[in-house]
Structure formats: C-alpha cells, structure tokens
Image 1 (cartoon, rainbow, N blue to C red):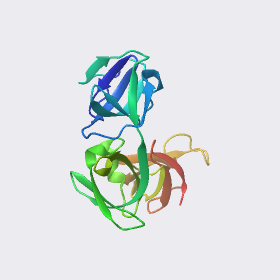
Image 2 (image 1 turned 120 degrees about the horizontal axis):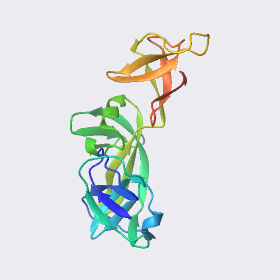
Image 3 (image 1 turned 180 degrees about the horizontal axis):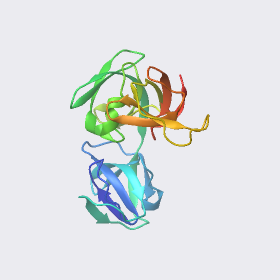
Image 4 (image 1 turned 30 degrees about the horizontal axis):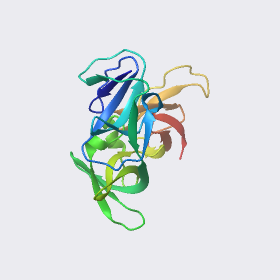
Length: 209
C-alpha cells in the first residue's frame, strides 16, 4: 500500500493510496489500527508526525505533487479521536473563518485551508449557517483542525438559464445560479427568487423551501 502526504485539494491517485493532510501539532493518542483499517477522516501518526486522512483510493488516475511512502498492510498506526461540535458562521476573510458557539457565544477562528471540501464551496457559507468543527484534544486543550458545511441548506435562486432536456411537463430541467459561479440543475418550475434546499456534498437539488 502507498501512503501519500499531501495538501488537500490535489488529486494524484495511485494504487491503494491514502491521501493525507498534515496536522502540525502534537495530538493526544487514542488507539491503534492497521493500514487496512484506516478510514477517511482518521487522524493518524506516521513516523512521529500527525496526519488527517482526506482520501483513500485504489486506482491510478491523476497528477500532482505528493510525498509517497510504501507501507505494509499490517503496519499499525496510532489514531486520535475527533470531537465534533456545531458552530454558527459569522463571517470570513481570505485567510480565516469566524464562528460562534451557539450555546456560549464564544467566538473561534479557523484557517480556511482547514475546510473539508473544494475551496470554491467556501462561498456557500451564509450568515447563521451551522457548520461542524472537528477538534483534537492536545496538551493545551481542544484544537480545531477542520470544518465542514452542513449536509443540506436552503439558498435563494439568483439567476436561471434556458430549460434543457425533455420539454414534457415535469421532465424538463434548467440550470440556476445560487452563488457567483455555482450552478445546479433544478426542475423547470423553479424561478429566480425561490429558495431551494440543496445537498452540499454533491450540489444536488432536493426541494423548494
């Protein structure tokens, strides 16, 4: 099995490759697993460094720069336990996202490069949106290492394009815009100004709000 240490967003894929995002702090250790038991989202220790697994794939397709290491299938890794907590989105700039604890109103900030997903989708963040922050327990307390959007959220349609596909009632679809450069396919009855729920992991229309 090959183990790749890399920045999130790059997509070199090699047989049985594990994609990793380096975690630069020293985190508390929890339990051990073998290479074959590693799952996406695990935080593992490899040669005295900590990494978050961002992708596991067994096909070779792709290109890019990555640090690749050979590992044995039965090689063991220490895994740290993540603690997830919901936070309310406040605002963001080019480097950080600012969030608030909905219970205590304590504010935290987290680097935008810790976003789980395509950085283009950061513009889907909205005021008061609930996002999930993953924490690791360190010697200095809980430290945020990643954050992700909710599974589903409602957005207002800001633009549409002509209907495409079958023109029979109920089968036609059209493309609408919910953010600058972010478009999705929706049923023909959706119009500008409508609010629609979409699933954020695949940007698919779910229903009208």
